[in-house]
Image (tube, rainbow, N blue to C red; front, side, top):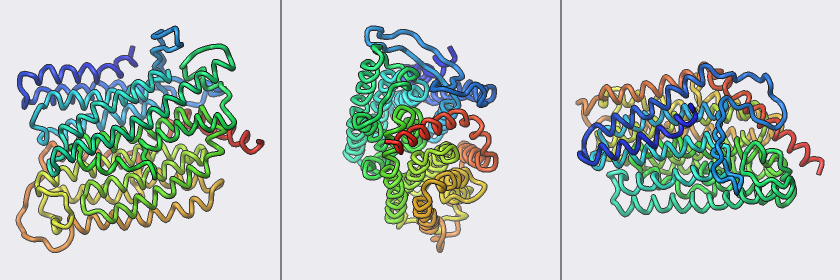
Length: 510
């Protein structure tokens, strides 16, 4: 029942936020309920992380090593079950979602002043859909949560968009986000149905169960077509070039908490989807497609870095920098080695934390200065309390300095991919130089330079300081003690690397 607790608490908490907020649209009660809801998810997930058996003992075959599992018949006529399970990969992602969920609630405390209950209902239901993705191992149930999280996120962008833009801009960004993700999701649904029917043709059993579908033979041209349906869906959400068109507008128009959810959680569901579905279900097709996927990853690294440098809006700069970071993830995924996959896991956590922190800081800066246009800022170091210092920490982290989680992730990805793809690694490494360019450009334009005055504009509140210190601690813990993540994800990453190696051998033989 612990899995049901993790899944349903966000939906129950969101409904309570809406009910309590109906009588007082500006009250604080929905905020406290939303924060407590995410805490009630974070604590049991942390307990699972601390007590779970993530050793390689018993590893073998094609059945994942689940820590907890729950299966209840749902639509038996079509072989659909309410099937939840959790392993090391899922534990890390649920922990990340619940932690950033608490911080998203905290950072919106003073920013959202209208329809507070409805806002937090949409925020909780978005996070509930994301957690459902991390727990569902029935492919129909997985798709159900994949689509479910889009609707409340649409309303967060359209109704509570950033104050610097008008409502029409918010709606356009929300519609673009919805069309991109909905269209690509339909491709994934078609591929899911294709996988189910191939399995039915081979075994005579109609099922959407992930454990059973792992044993399906999905090679050849048809397997490649089905794999591409998953790839496009995840590449849009990651996002990778050329499927990135929705991201900058959506994040620029989102409230700070919405941008935290988009960059820290929703985007990371794509990396999870690659690790859970695309690579294990289609090892041969994925191995054959690896050169193209890695080329897209390298293009994303350079494109995101160059476009970040060209921006004047802080949020858009951070958005394009996240595209560059996710390019490294795509390279690591399709290198397929245990080391590169472990690097992907660290990079997912590191990018989620550092990008979320930069979006929160952009929101705090806007509250004080009334603009995010870097051309109108400058000379703010020493005039905003600890805020510029925190910005420097996360800018340094985003460019991959040692002792930060970002450095560990990028190093493991490049080191793990070098043996099989040395030239890809050499070219991709140049993106780290460009990261230094746009990161230092951000610091120079916003915080350095000649100050326009000597007075203190505004210091950080205790709530804001606590949010940022939490993110700093997470970044340093993962950067200095990466085994806290690597030991938990090792079993799952070993399974994925085994499947990929099997597909690589089959692809080479054919």
